[in-house]
Length: 167
Image (cartoon, rainbow, N blue to C red):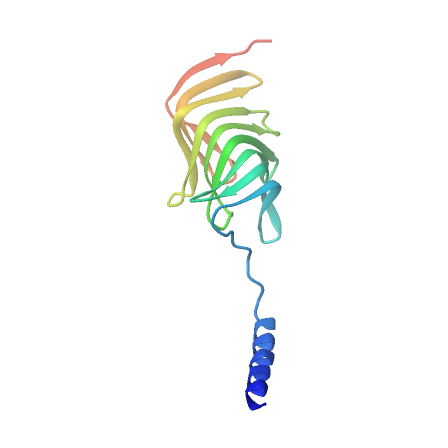
């Protein structure tokens, strides 16, 4: 009988103790998948990034397949599509994207980039691959680019061609 009361006291203590702890963030177990999902990055109550994906896979790395999303800038929105997007473990940062299309609503610029990487030390996105920028007045191509974390500014490295479109 005394053994039962010890077990009962332990269970009551355990239930009370675990009931008072803070809720934990969801952590993916090894090799999980999710279909048709939305990930949002919010800072100080302001939506910074929203990504919708056909599929999320967590194996050795976390990546999204066939994504589209929005970077919310101070004055406009920047839309993007990517074939694959690799994320940090906590899903808060894009580390790498492939076959990327970016469109800025305010400037009417369109960007086509083969691969995009994140540099955590400099807090910029960059690429050493072919980049093409299309605007209402012309087109610029180059090898490589650098952009801030919300694509507020983008700079083409090694620009090679500028074609003016005349109307």
